[in-house]
Image (cartoon, rainbow, N blue to C red; front, side, top):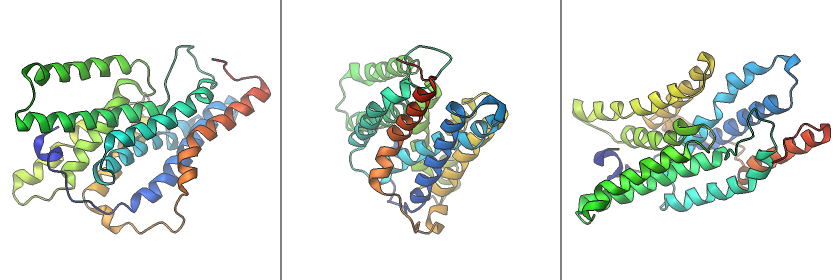
Amino acid sequence: MTDATLANTPARPVSTWTGWGQWLALITMTLDHGVRYLAPDAWGLEWIGASLGRIAFPLFAGMVAWHGLFNTRNPLRYARRILVIGLVAQLPFMLMPRASDALLLNVCFTLALGLAAVAWYQRWNIRWSAGSLPRWQRVGEPLLMLSAWFLAGNWVEYGHAGLLLVPAFTLAIAGLAQTGETRRERLVPVAGTLPLLAVAGLMNSSAMAKSFTVATCLGVLLLAAGAHAAIPRIPWPMPRRLWLAWYPAHFTAIAALLLIVGQAAWP
């Protein structure tokens, strides 16, 4: 991440689009999980997970990056709140049937760790620019973060690519939200979107799933480039308690249904 994009945080843009994004993310996530864990294979609904279901994670990641940049003074505290939701949801998440019995941490851990990495970089970059970093920390801290990314990627949902999505969104959104007059000032933010699109392209296996993931990322980038100003306020804003409780609650409901039919995977 460059000094120009994250050291100088752009002016706060309109965030009304996130009200629509919350509903879309929850609906597509719930559809994905409902089809994956509850629908019989004979129904032939796998296409939902490979299409609409691939909207949720990049949309969540884009909103986390957006709020981390513009709507919170303490991204690390915001990451801790996401982590608490993940901790509450982990037990019902572990009851979902999977091909492997290995421990897997749910997507809230992926989002929280990605945002924590952004918060670390911002603080590290400020100290680097001020010349207050000891010599060993200039290289040692990035190496520790790289090692943490390598290890954590084996334990979280969406793996190593998923951990990179919030940092890549942060880089891209911060650049696009800044205005430039020269050609170079306009091209640098465009170049900053390339890591995000590369990460999005590495996620998922099928061409359809990749297409929906990349398309969702492009939609958030379009909003960051100025389209956010044209999005009206949602007439039915999501209640805060519903937003915070839905992730663990919907897994609890699915786990209860699976337990009734004897298909839950006990941890």
